[in-house]
Length: 504
Image 1 (tube, rainbow, N blue to C red):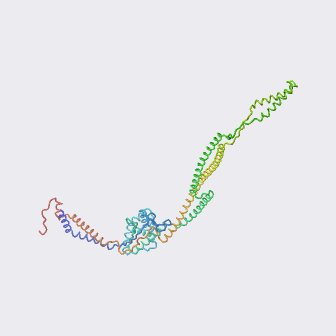
Image 2: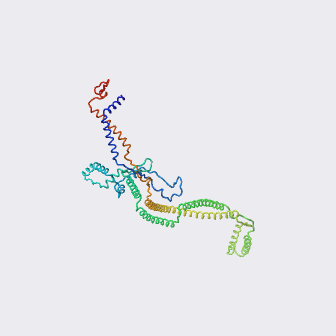
Image 3: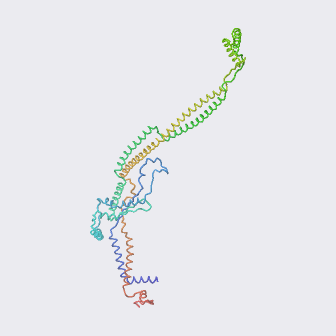
């Protein structure tokens, strides 16, 4: 069957060789003519390297030494959004208009210009009719030129890289190179304008001055409060005060124990002193009662006088009565003092009592001293506690002032750094040091990228063969006569036994 098919096509082409050759020649000729007439297209190419930032070009004062933990240059990967943003900027109409400002139109041959104008007019007829229908604004020649250039300008991100490849095609190689160079220059200038505002440095300087004045006022307020309270280093002074208070509390507890011990000792000595006699007997002896010795002669004399008076007076006389009263009184005294001897004793201070008394005196003095020391320490502890409370209260205010100073300082340094960054950015922009750099300058194309003659001829040959075969087959199908066994079998439904040629 495959052999029959091959024979069929071979016979078909042989029988219809005229149609096959004419169609093949016409199609291939048209392809060759179009290839030769088609003006050459040159492509200028440039590459842009996109970086995350340009900070590595600056020397930071915070970087002292380079280490794995603190590298001197920090590189961050470029995001896909950054690369796409650069692609959109490179192909924007704004940059194209700036690039073609003052640039002459590339020269073209008369035939090329006529062909272009004819095709352009035919293609623009629907657009022009639509604009007339809706009263849309008409495009200026410069806008039409910019749109045409935008169709020939391409920017693509090279895979797995931070490079953006920019291609521009034109029929004039020198003009393509010049236009792409101007576009890259405008792109860098535009990028510099985007990354820096000329008013930024002035704004940051003004803000830094205001914040510097506020920082100075906060620092002065903190200094005055520290001078007023005497607190220069709150943590150190607070810790020293706590340590001093702890020492005083320990001393107070110790003196309290000593005072309690002294008071107990005084109480014990007082009890012992009361139980100990102050004086003890030293010597005891018996002596004669001198009062009785003087009274007895007087009694004898009174009795003699009474006896003498009885001889002359009555017992009831006054004088006898007086002598009897004196004698009765003397006898009462003698009866009361019915002792011939009296006991005479001598005493002395008890040495034990003296020792206890001296110990008591010393104990009272020690207790008084301990109490005075305890009271002094209690006063000092109370003063220290009051100082600690005052320091804590003042510390809250100092911490608030310090936070205010830290906040003002951070804000001031932030604007100061922003001002320095703005000035550095202005210098970098002036020297065109951006986060994008020209990795490859626009190339001067030497050979055209289109048309590719061998590819066009090859495609034309394949197309011509296909068209010739199609024309031969169509002619075969249009002819009602039967020329092949396959046609006989298809028309009659019977197999062909033999074929008789005309020569037979």
